[in-house]
Every structure is written in C-alpha cells, then in structure tokens.
Image 1: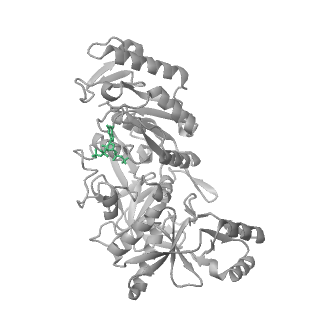
Image 2: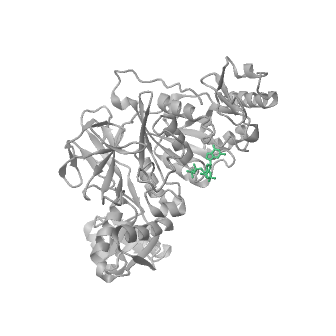
Length: 534
Ligand code: G4P
C-alpha cells in the first residue's frame, strides 16, 4: 500500500482548512462501494473488509437502509461517511449509482467541494459516469480520476487516458501508473512520489518500495518481469511527454484531473488517492448565496439542507436533515434561523455520521455535514443562518417526465397517505402534485425505479399500500409570470393544473405539441422545466 504524502495543514490553520468534502461518482459496478470501503480501511475508520457491504445489521455503514435496495442491489439514497487521516477530516457523501436517482445525486453534488470519478479500466467512460461528470463540470467541481480494476485485463493505459480526455474534454495527468495489467499486474509507479511499489509475490500487497530519480531507472530492476516493467515505464514516459503537467489552478477550476490507476480490491492506489485528496484536494470553497459570496472563514454559521431522510431507523421514526455547513463554527445547542420559515430553531441533538455510527456533534465547521433530527421543519434547499436572510443557490427541482396517479388500496387511509406523500416530497423522493380538479394526487419522478421505492416505502414505513394509474400527461412545467396572466391561464386550463408542495402552479401537458402550443399562445408566461428551491 502506498504511504501517503499528505501535507497536513499547520496547526494554526483554521479547522475548516482541514476538511475535504467529496463524493464518488461512477457507473454502477465500476467499484465505488469497494473503493469507499478501502478508503475507510486506509483511514482506520473501519477495521476489516466487508463492513461497508455488511447489510441487514443495524449499524449504518453506508446508505443502504432500505429493503428494496437489498433486493435490487442498487444504492438508492445518499449518505455521509466521515473519517480522519493525518489530521485531515474527510466527509464522503455517497451518491446513488442508478440513473433513476439522479436528482438525489445532483443535490448531493451541490454539497461537495471535489469528486472522485471511478472508471472501470476495462470499460472506460460509461453513460452514468459521463452524466455525473457533466453535473460536476457545471459546478466547476474539481475531479480526481481513479481508474479501477487494473488487476483485471483492461484497456491500454494510454488508450484509456486518451479516451477519457477526448470524451470529457478534460486534461489528465498521471499520478499513479500501472506496472502491467490483468495477470501481468505487478505494481504501481507513484509519479510525484518518485517511487514504485511492487508485490513481493504475485497478487500480493504492494509492500516493496523502490525509490527512483527518473522512471527509466526502474528498467532492469531485480525481481520484476523485465518485459512488463519496460513496457510500463515506456508507456509512462510517453504519457508524461504528451500530457500537460499537473497544475493546481487548472485542477481547482475543474479543467485538469489527476489520474490514479489502481485496484480497489487489492488496495492498490487507494492510499495514493487519499493522499492526493488530503494534500491538494480543495478545502471548503466559498458558496454563492443570493447576492453575495459566503466565505468559509466567516464567523457566523450558515449552511443548507441538501437531503432529508425520513425513517432511517425503522425502530425510531426519525427524520434527519443533512446540512452542509458553509461558514462559521457550529456549536451544539445553537439556535439557527430558517430563512424560508422565518423561524429560529434550537439545534439540540445534531449528529455526525462516522463510518460505523452516528455521534452527537459538539462542534462543526464549514465543510462538515451535520444531521439535524426534526419533525418536518426542514426541507431540501432550506438555508440556515445566525439570522441573516440568505439563500444558497443551486438545489433545483426538475420537471418530472414520468407521472402517475396514486390510488389507495384502502380508502380509509387517505389522511395517512397525505402525510406520507408530504414526507416523501420533502425528502425529494418524488414530487407530489395535487390537481386542482381531482382529489387523487399525482406523483412525478425522473426514473421509474423511484416509483417502486415510493410504493415500497409507503407500504413498509407508513402501512399505506397504493397502486399507480397512468395519466394522460407526458410532462409538467412550472408556470411563472404576472399573477393576473397566470390566473387567466389557470382558469382556461383547470383540468391540467396542479399545485406542487409549495402551492406553486404546475401545468400538466398531454403532449409536447400541446406544451409547445401553450408556450406560443401565452407569450407572457414562462413554462419552467427547472425550479430553484427555497
Ligand atoms: P459499485 O459500488 O460501483 O457498483 O461497485 P462495487 O464496488 O460493488 O464493485 C462491483 C464489482 O467489481 C464487485 O464484484 C467488486 O468486487 C468488483 N471490484 C471492485 N473493485 C475491483 C478491483 O479493483 N478489481 C477487481 N478485479 N474487481 C473489483 P462482484 O462480483 O459484483 O461482487 P462481489 O461478489 O465481489 O462483492
């Protein structure tokens, strides 16, 4: 395993400078879970492999609380894992790999300062990686690239880098480089560390460390297949010759990504990645709130809710809002001001999410994620402050493309259904639309798997079995414009209007053509596909 070369911040540096808040993005199966587990292992947060995947037990080692997730093997919610190494506090925000939960992922990515993009060496860039990368690019999030599974037959490293670079229009520079791949895999060259790491025996851990002045010095080294080593060094020299050198500014602006070849399963390259994250990964970045930039070192506490999760523990019907702190030093017992509700709330029992357990938070700084148990006061997109009415930008709602009417199996449970749907809407699991001319609610989702999750959760967590009925609408748009004009539109289209959970009017269109016509006929109105929360 590589020894990390973390340059720990000096003791006088502010606490927030020691925070690294990041997410891992990948296509399903690329190795995100395995890498997460190995990062936790490398930091000592967990002691043995298998714990991240251990399911069914009550400890929350990862985000998979839901039975449906276990049945389908897809991670459906996002959660937080905090761990520490060499004085750096890492906050890893988990994101669902399945594209049906992309909204959840977008929100989570609004709360990070960096991302690790995991790529399967045999597959290169896959569809979901590409989509998530685009979201990171929109937000200028710096990206680390981890090319996983070099212990398996993969594509040639230079070809892979070429492909990634061309597909994503992203500059790359190698930090670790494989010595052989698949059955030929012998070790890694740690480029900035100027050393190579080899397995003492084939398939074993990379415990043999060989320093070098230039990679070419390695050629002919005892105990490593000369052909494999020569090919690797040659490839690396070529790559270093044609690729741009590492440039911190370019990385921080999201234009250049350091590349770590490795094998999560063999723990190869994992410590190097962690060292990179700790060493030059960004500490909490300034955040844009309406009209001003909030700096992490500001004295007053501010933060925003990027996720709400109800019923995390079925034994305690709790609801937790995940807050990303953006400035100040939060202390337990503090009162924070919710700008949307225009109300103070005392934060009595904030929680931290360590790898294996939750712990009460006494103090937290910018970059940290705290969980605030609440009874529905906090919603996704809410901003908390010490009194200033600010709102952080960047947590949108997306117009759902899949709409279904929700029908109760047992009509007596109408009230429970209403409450349950409200909870689910506040969590952001689905959007709930209430047609003005029909009592049955409509739910809107981006991916059909969300519908399965909703019905399963309504049944299991609320005891409200439902079924879906298709509706004749194909899409929804928020309507915006002058009040009088909106009222005229709503009157003229009563049977196609619903209200969202903020009572904002939504136009349900029966076809794209109908929507296009409405846009043409009502030029003073806007038909919005994205609505900022808050
Ligand atoms: P995901 O969260 O991105 O979906 O991927 P996950 O870590 O679950 O990994 C997907 C599969 O790839 C798993 O195999 C895992 O063991 C394997 N894998 C992950 N990293 C590496 C690696 O570095 N090398 C190799 N050779 N395999 C790797 P599985 O057979 O689906 O599951 P399991 O039975 O091994 O748990």
